[in-house]
Image (cartoon, rainbow, N blue to C red; front, side, top):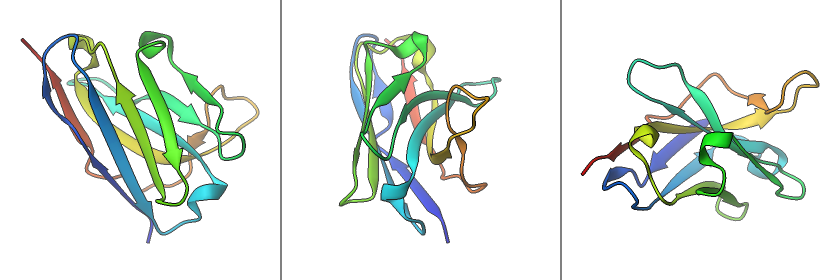
Length: 125
């Protein structure tokens, strides 16, 4: 079955960095766009970044542009999120999912209903 296993979260001070990993299985990783999402306390899950399956082009929400970098390793079926200059508002549980494009949507929609356990990111001094 489809599985997503996020790791790399932790406690970091404002201005610090973390690199998240998401190992996947159960689907043809190289054939899908991949997305990172986050869900802060009391908030809905929101998309953060996306990377295509073809040319690995990337897209970011405005709040993380210039600070976060999404990348993928098709040989390892893994997607990464490098997070620099972290702010308190970045604190959330981070998730990944595969993405399917939709003509009316700016970002690919989640391809699968299943989600991983997420990676907790805490930003505090």
